[in-house]
Image 1 (cartoon, rainbow, N blue to C red):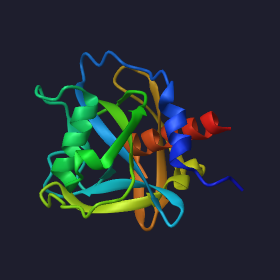
Image 2: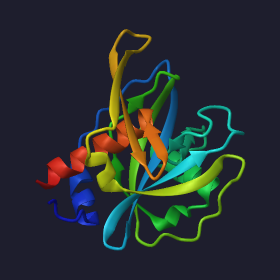
Image 3: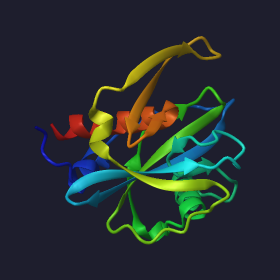
Image 4: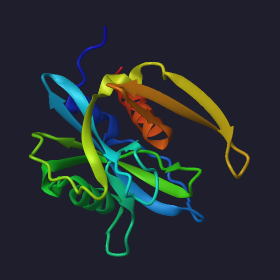
Amino acid sequence: NRAVMTVSDIRNAFQTYKRKELPCTHKRRSAALVPFFMHDEEMYLLFTERTEMVERHKREISFPGGMCEPNDADAVATALREAHEEIGLPPLSVEVLGMFDDYTTKTGFCITPVVGFIQELPPLAINIQEVAQVLSVPADVFLADADRETTFHDSEGNAVQIFYYKYGGYEIWGATAAIARGIMQHIVLASS
């Protein structure tokens, strides 16, 4: 049985991490906040369920995030701005711990995951145009073997694995599942 994950484990895992940056020349640059928080002495991740009204990925479970805008200083600024716009998470309530490897999607996005920790989850103000609800999922869910795993070939002919996780009647899959899984595996390896 694994020891309880702490914010120190996450902090240490990203202190000197050299992430894989992709050129992303033909993709739309975006960033996602991967927000960890503690609840009842267990580490959780915060997700959003997208509404039917959004342009892409309707009803999918995702991290708060979106397209980089010219006024954003960097990926961290994008992730914090988007989390504030989507769920009302104040940027100052997030301790940014680092960034994980860029991830490209078959839908043309290049996502930079920004790993953060929320000491105390504030009351959230959901943007009902974009977010149907906020979900809290135990981080350990992403250490389990994926419910199922599919391989497909992207437009460049690369084999891509798609992971699916089920939690509380929700299915978390695609880029979101791959990012969560990769980050959790990195933290576990770094703390072992």
